[in-house]
Each structure stands twice: as structure tokens, then as C-alpha cells.
Length: 385
Image 1 (cartoon, rainbow, N blue to C red):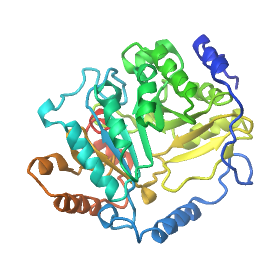
Image 2: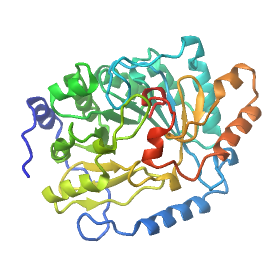
Image 3: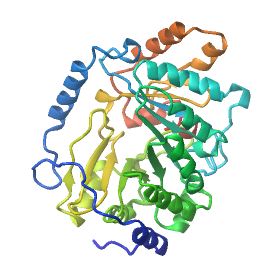
């Protein structure tokens, strides 16, 4: 199976961005493409890690199954300058009145509380977080929080090239860029807007400023972009990218259909036919991604297998929506309003009890994909991913 030539824009990115080879993560010795241990052994190892490290962690952020939640995703806005098919309906969604959205100070108040209790990674999402006017200031203030090790952002990349120098100076340490196709015309079809070259410029700028890896999120949909898997992986030969192939997930308004979902194993099989030497990398604790690398390539690739092989057993994520609701599971429809309690004058102790109760109700795992498709949940854009 041949890899199609990349576009001129991509060739320019390759020429201007290729530097010395990355050291890369160590790999285990095993046959190409096969995991070094069984899924059961891996899950057991990761659960043992959680048990051994449970003692010093906040009880408010530890659920009834011993999962410690050290990663908080905060949605800064419900607005977006694109209309991606898998994220929201073409006509958009009803937006929450501005008065009901979290203010900057409320966002920072909640962030301080969560970091004090053990959160060490915060990711800013949306909507599109880079259309929020004070996003640079928010990053700068988060950067001052003692104990917070990582500040990341997930963006569609349209405004990234312009804002990234300021964001990096403010303290932004990790970037995920959504890009579902390398074909400009198809890009406009998927996102219902123009902007492909702006996204590519954003990726270029992130590499130029030394971010490594730059994570590229690609939602794979049958009949739309599954034919570009090889092209995306080819980019990792010379660029410090982590191309993350995401299984198509059901949310309100995206007209999810099982037939459109391309499973992790199907994608992996396609790639192994082209690169039989593909190696599986060790999984990090609480990682949602199954990571692989082609020997000699600078970057890597990953799979987010939310539908075919869930990773609920070691989930460490919590989410705060733009209107201030705490979601303990991306696919769950249970939410609690932290905004309302904040505005009612709740003390820190009262907020922690509310948060702890919500975390304590978190289920062992989310429902299956067909059940999720029938559940009432927010569109992805109103959750923040």
C-alpha cells in the first residue's frame, strides 16, 4: 500500500522543521506490533501502582474504586470558530448565557482548590479555548500554582501560530492540535469552514518553538478519512509529532453511526501492513493512549480506544464545563454545578465535600458504545473533550 505524496505545505513544514533525531522512549523487546504483556497484566500493574500511591493523595479526588484523579480538564468557552461534524451540528448549539459561564476568577479559584488537593495537570479546552480573549492571562496565572506540573491546551489550531509565542512565555507546556485530514478541500468539508493552512502553520510554529511531541488529534471516520492513516503516520518520520488516532465517539448532535467507526485493531492492522516493524511503546500510568513507534522515525503514533477497548480502570480525569459543572466521566450524564455553590458563598470545605461526593459516585466504567449512543449527553463542544 503506497503512501500518497504530501502536500506542498506539508513538505515545507518537513523541510523547515526536521532537526536532530529524537531520543524517543525506550521500547520493550518483543515481536513488532505486539504488546509486551497481556492487557490483564498491564491493568493489574497499573492498579497496583494506584494502590501503592493512594495514601498521600486527597480523599476528595479518590473514587470508590481507588482511582486517583490528578488531571483536570477545564473548558474555557462553548464557542468555536469551526463546526466539526463529530463535535456539533452544522447549525451550531444553543449557547449558555454569558452570565452563567464561569468568570476568569471562578476558573482560577476552582483550579487553585483542585491543585491544592493533588491535581498536577490541567488542560484547557473548549469550544475553542484560543478564542477566549484572556486565555494567555489564564495560562500565566495557572503557571503560578505550586504543585501544577503541566498546563496543556487542546485547540483546533486556527489561532495557534499567532498566540503560541505568548502562551509559551506564559507557561504553556503541552499542545494538542485537532486535524482530521491532510487534504485542504476535505478539511473544509469536515469542519465546515476554511482554515487548513492556518492549522498547518500552527503545527509548524509549535515545532519551531520546541514543543515535543506536538500531539495531533485525528478522529477517524469510515468513508471520510480512514484512507489517510498512512499519510498521517508518514509525517512522524521527520517531525516530533504524536499522531493520535481517535475512535469516533457518540455525542449529542454528531449523528454517530457504528458503521462509521474504525476500530483501533482495524487501524493497527492497516499500519502494520505498511510498516511491519511497528513497535509498541510502554504505556504510562493512567494513559489513555496505546502508543507505537516506527524504528528510525522521529515521532510516534497513538490510538485512543474509548469505544473498542475502554481505559476506565485507570482513569484519572475530571472535567469542568464552561458553565461550571463537574463531570467525572466524559460519557456520563451526571453533573454537579460548582458554579452555583461558588456563587452561593460555599466555603472551601463545602466545595470539597461536594467534589468528593461527585467523585465518589463515579462508576467503574462507562456504558458500551451502543448504550452511549442512546444516552442523553451534551454535544462534545459543550463538554470540552
